[in-house]
Length: 155
Ligand SMILES: [Fe+2]
Image (tube, rainbow, N blue to C red; front, side, top):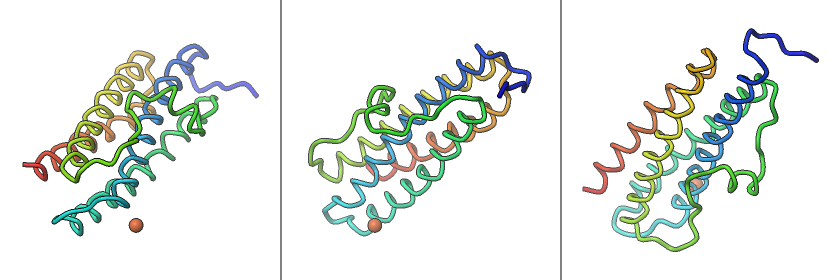
């Protein structure tokens, strides 16, 4: 069925492509955070175990909203590890980091997702896709805030 929401097919594709990159980055950081929740060790175990749970739970909810916005634009949402690896700028965890490195990696991860989200917002503004902007702008706030909290945890 044709989509007529006042955004051209080409512009919807630009928005959806940008959102797919944000979805992939958010999903990759979600998975990294959940893995750290499982594997964290050390004197701050209890605090970090819970802090990481709060963070991955938030991102788990967020990826659904991002994916459904892609669908509303008439595109298919990426939903496999292979697609996420291709789209993401964040690298998967494949080592066994210390709790300090976990905190640092997540801090840098949230900064990266904030940067990706800002790029998506610019594209959404470019094509007058206000609804995508409304979904993405709060993600910038959230990731910048979480990066600050992780910085405060590490120092
Ligand atoms: Fe758990």
